[in-house]
Amino acid sequence: MLDVNRRKLITLFGGTAAAWPVAARAQHPDRMRRIGVLMGRAQGDPEGQRQAVAFREGLAALGWLAGRNVTIEHRWHAGETARADAYAKELIELRPDVLVANTTPSLAAMQRQTSIISIVFIGVADPVGQGFVSNLAHPGGNITGFGLEEPSMGAKWVELLNEIRPGVTRPIILFNPETAPFARAFLPSVELAAKSAGLTLRIDEVRNDAEIEDALAAAAREQGAGLIVLPDAFLFGRRNRIIKVVGESKTPAVYAYRTCVVDGGLLAYGIDRVDLFRVAASYIDRILKGEKPADLPVQHPTKFELVINVKTAKALGLEVPPTLLARADEVIE
Image 1 (cartoon, rainbow, N blue to C red):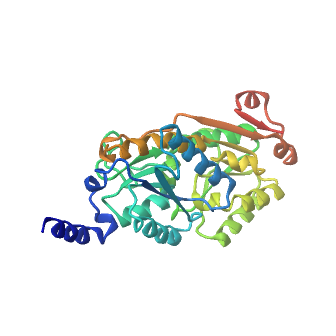
Image 2 (image 1 turned 60 degrees about the vertical axis):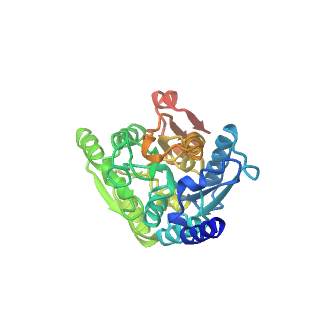
Image 3 (image 1 turned 60 degrees about the horizontal axis):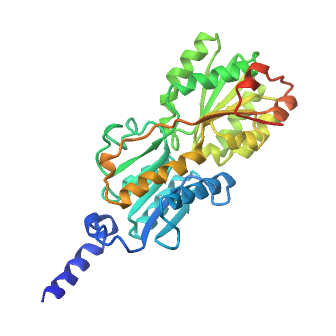
């Protein structure tokens, strides 16, 4: 009779993945664990693959080996919010032990689907302001993780643009408010830095490919324009088009992603996102061993990188100041 009742209880609670009791799953330490990862990149994107490899390496270093004691399920939405929602639902239906959300659209999609399964985010800016956690030290709820650049970084991008192209008088800020709602947190520091340098700032919100093309064309026509592409999964997925157009129009551009410079962009300054995936494995390990996201503080990035493409600078008719080259973590010839 006891076994019959137990089967009834499992049937009752096992129908909905988001409601499956965490404690019940944690009682079997020797079973295969499952991690669902929702990536804000395209599956074929080399940067996304580097991040996925770093994540597996970080887990392996802690004893979690894919195919042996853990299964890692990846889904890739390339900054498309509708696809993010569909994949978040699909991952949750697999009844994972923990979820990983890369980028704001991924985390927002997962938050809409479950308030019970543990979620570790990787690369999400302003998680408190966006309503994902109650505070950084004690997140509360089922979400914690690793953030992006601080809002004060906006001033740094303006300074670098002005340093590599002193003739810039019109910095243009580019982002998609739907996939990067946090971007406005950078604007106060951007505006202050622009004002201090005597620059006239313009903010272009782009929600689709046509609006990107219009913004880039307007930048090309404007004397003294320079572009600052904010961290944004949507724009990252379209980086090759952006790099090509600004290169043809001789418009200097600053990015938050190293990959953009590797792909031909001029300059990037931001966190080491690949390393962030490796570091984030530590929280997965702790959660799989029984700790709760509510008790794990949100971590700030500590590793930043300045990358300059000298070849692109020459094509734009720019001479990179020696002082800037000396500060660079990587120079692409």
